[in-house]
Length: 365
Image (cartoon, rainbow, N blue to C red; front, top):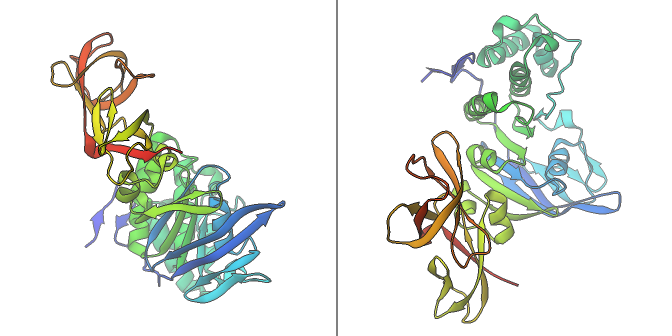
């Protein structure tokens, strides 16, 4: 069913459907300047799946995208699209023969071509009539039908992003590769553009690989999220899986700030100044780190029960209080986020309770 989308965008459900392809990285290795950037990197995307590659700078995520695009050769392993090898040592199928779409961080629009000509550029294999129909359908979907005679420099940043999206999906590729597609947009635009882009990806059913350094963005967009570290996938799963059960402390730190408390396992539990927490699967006497997320890991109130503490800082963030609470026995204040409460103020004595379900426990080396 067609429904009206957000302001300035076209009708949802009107984007042409792609013939979604599979995309597989099989033990891919890439070396740049003598450094291993991808280290036996393996990942398989199902048709129509959206996977976000998440990682710090230098983790290899953009290199993986360049490999999939056919821009970067591989030194070992293979890349397959629909089970056909498109990259292997000594073999790199050109980008234009892979059935892929590309959307870059800087949009990479052609400044000397009009909005319509930019979209038509990827449709040169079609006849003029069919190409115009697909290009104009894509421009209508992103709300730029009335700007087809303009040049890119006449568009705002958000409109340029929408043009880049239209150009990417108009040829109806089997795989779409997006490199930090929202990083140049201001915060006011980013959420709407991200939401509408996701709607377009769902409508086209295109298999999508999105590179981002923003954990929230990856969790909103991806059917699965792959966390890269030193050229390998450290963890992959749904947003809920990797957030609730991070593979290690570093993975947990990547997804949110943490308050960390060192302790030791004793009779299946670890004591902290905020109370004890269960330590399933960890040996008696094992040193552990208790990690408490600001949202959900603990709560505070002006009355008991709980561990006494004192608010040492408080910031308002649109319906949310961001607080630091000092508790005896902790080396640093405990970070807490919870719904705004005008009764809470800096210097106030409060009681803190842990939510063991949202407290993480990791073995310490």
